[in-house]
Length: 88
Image (tube, rainbow, N blue to C red; front, side):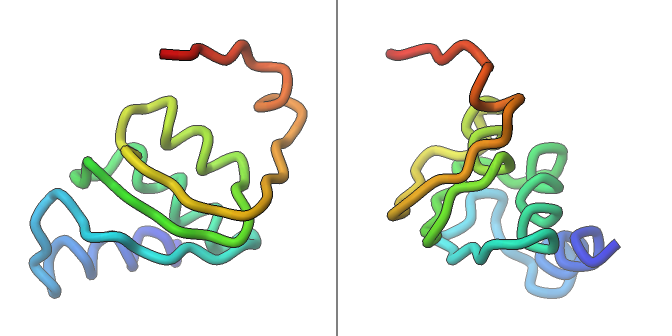
């Protein structure tokens, strides 16, 4: 629910373009939910910075919505860990 409010705020109240500037993502369940919500949202060409990559980071990359991510560590869940990785 928090994720829906944030996406609605960015789309309607801030009136951001569909390509967001670099944003900082935190860790935890709320940040995970917000990042996951971007997968189905209007925004694309996302760029983010975070201390830790969670499953939602990898899901955003796989969806094509996230173009760039910078971080210092990652905590992939078992589903992400077992998923075949495609290199380009």
